[in-house]
Image (tube, rainbow, N blue to C red; front, top):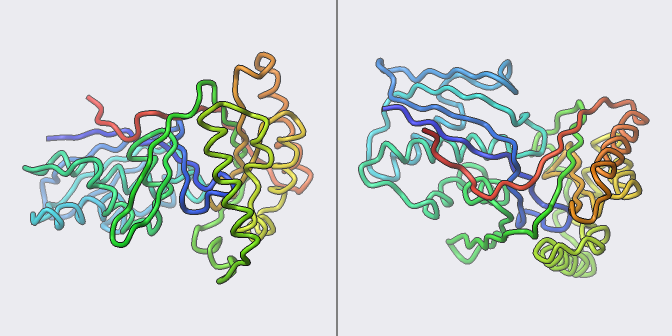
Length: 307
């Protein structure tokens, strides 16, 4: 038996939604899983990260597959994994979440009594450490995540039609661990209130397609002021994107990617997207950093099985 799955990239935080809001993107990794003939798991990787990702049991997809079998009370077999990546690692686009969710979803198909998609969230968060990437990778769309005691709650939203995303991927890497170490242990009440209002406004703007609030609704005081100094050109790229016509811009996850949001029906043809892309490229170039642009939109399916 061979199982092939497709899992989307994700963009978390979107400014004020720290560790609680994420989007699934139409950029995909594909993962093919089967039981190995011998006793040793094998890993083949093509595409993004092919030269740097592990090829043994430390690979996140294999760790996820083994964890799921253990939670089901089953002995994990040796696996044969092939992964084709379009999501760059350490880019702020959920590459680790894609590996985890892909491994869980593929291994789930081998179980005699598979878990529901909702039940896969807990082991996914256990491996990732936070929910805002794994949840949209599982469910698609925009997802809001909250912890209630021992349980994670998610609310999946379908943003208004026409949401367009411009991603500026600088030629830099920034690990989530490094990006978390610079964050303060405590925040002020005023900063908490600042982010609460903007996270609510961001959610409303995504649902209604109202673009005008995005510029201020994607502002943040909890993580971006501390992370942007680690990413030359990021703050300038966010400002340049808005000046070029984007509704709003933010770091994608912990960065270094910058994401700009707009609604297509308000754009004058494709020219606005081109201007936004050019502005972000120029801002990073001024900081001495090369980058590439990916134009995409929201994925509404999450991880799926492929024939």
